[in-house]
Amino acid sequence: MNIRLLAKSSIRNGLFRYYSSAAPQAKKPTGVVFMNMGGPSKVSETYDFLYRLFSDKDLIPLGPFQNWTAKFIARRRTPKIESHYEEIGGGSPIRYWSEYQCQKVCSILDKINPETAPHKPYVAFRYANPLTEDTLKQMLNDGVERAVAFSQYPQFSYSTTGSSMNELYRKTLELDPERSIVWSFIDRWPKHQGLIKAFSQHIEDKVAEFPESERSNVSILFSAHSLPMEIVNRGDSYPAEVASTVYAIMENLNFKYKYRLVWQSQVGPRPWLGGQTDKIVKRLEKKDEIKGMVLVPVAFTSDHIETLHELDIELMEESDFPEKIKRAESLNGNEQFIEGLAELVKDHLNSETLYSKQLELDVSLAGEYASDTFDHPSEMFGDHRTK
Image (cartoon, rainbow, N blue to C red; front, side):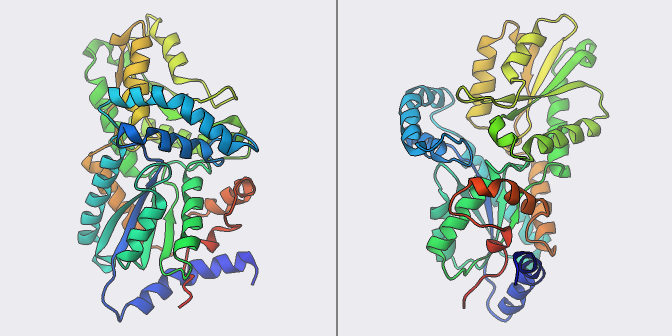
């Protein structure tokens, strides 16, 4: 059977065969796995986090000496990044918020989708604890046989969501060779209404902090993590999907504010996606007609170093007019957002799809640059049990 037919067969039969075969047995938990980059929860974990990050050629391609270069960069950057984590409270809050959100989502799912209950929450980070392999081991110990890999990057990039997906595949072959867990994948959700409405409300809340007479002249700057142009030029869908999120938010707000999409967190000398957040802010803050700016971390689902330090501290310290700049709150514990996540998982669990149609094209365009992974998503997702 060729790969296309295998994919169609897997999508059509994978989940249904799982549920029909599992039905006579005691109910096993459905795993809901929040997947993200992660961050060091303690300052002492910073070097390990940076080394894993710079070792990942899916995210930052550094050439044939990737591992050596990653060690060199991690050693050089660790003292500075450790000081940044000290300044934001001694570590990244992303694990706290990820576990909080996932637990809430599973509690909601138990009520609104009892057919797949109980739902058990997990977090799998690519570069920090809990790492993918540790979470997978725990799931196997817990007897999970059905799981949803839920990317916490709302907008797909092969360098982020794709990297987490590839790592899940590698660790599955290593730790679950019998393929006892039937996986499916929520690989993107850039225009989901829970996301759009939560961001819209946070923007309105922040604009309301400006004097009423100035609000019509407040500009909204949507700041997303940038991406190397080398990855963009492969046909990566991330820039377009971030733009779709921005447009959907502004559409929800009836386009009543001026806005731009800008990009942050560039690393190294190679060309990255721009214009850069700090440079655009510098230009706009000096203009008399700009009465204020609201920064919106549109590609992040919770606070971490890029919001708490890069935007809240570094950008503000470099500003000549900090009184003009406010940052919209991150989504964190927003109930509307979390309820939206639960609805998204419910719809996915009750659908006939294992992953989005776009994922096949993502793999076709970028998979050749990855190592030790699959040629088609159907090799990872669907029913591959050997028993």
